[in-house]
Image (cartoon, rainbow, N blue to C red; front, side, top):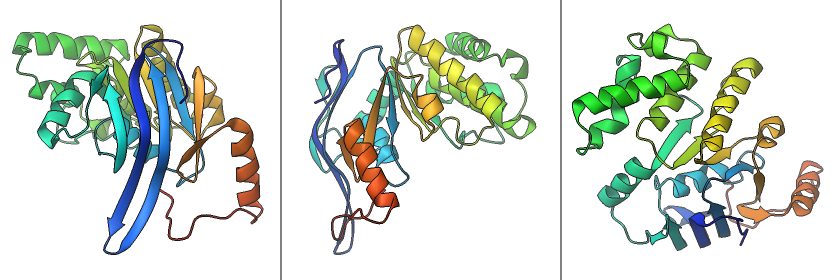
Length: 254
């Protein structure tokens, strides 16, 4: 296991993920052992189809592993039903996606407020304050009443970051957050993630861009559905690109 220097907030032991279509099994992740420390900033890298997004989905309780054990904030989550996973996810995890995933016919403020609509413990007036605070933190307070189609891609992603932060989750998961942005806007969004890390949040980010991965404290390399060390990663990647690499029969990379 990759051992963090701080107490672990995410712990994965022997995690595997298999997708089944009829009689065909696609082994997407195999024997994942990973610990992420509280307040740590990690990047998850690797080629397209290596399992990065699947790993992030398991971390965020958007999916469940086929095998292995998973602990979040010290609590075992194995066997939780969909509704229970959703409650844990809503309170403890914020998401930033490559495609922004904003709703076009909702205002910026209403998009940001969406995660709070499932929080019965937060009154309406407090929700309004939290939305305003989140938008101000990403420099979008002046766009509260606008709609996503009226915003640039960089502005939409900043709104998406505000939505991820509005419930004050300790964990922020970002899946290729700069993938649809130009370099300047990508740097702005990465600056926002770095600010959240500096404020004490745990940040786990999938990226194919080594420039942005270098901003993290640690990079996890995935190849062929497994975590590999940097030396092995480079060797296997070079062999694959030269046509010498092989994959296990019947396995589909994700």
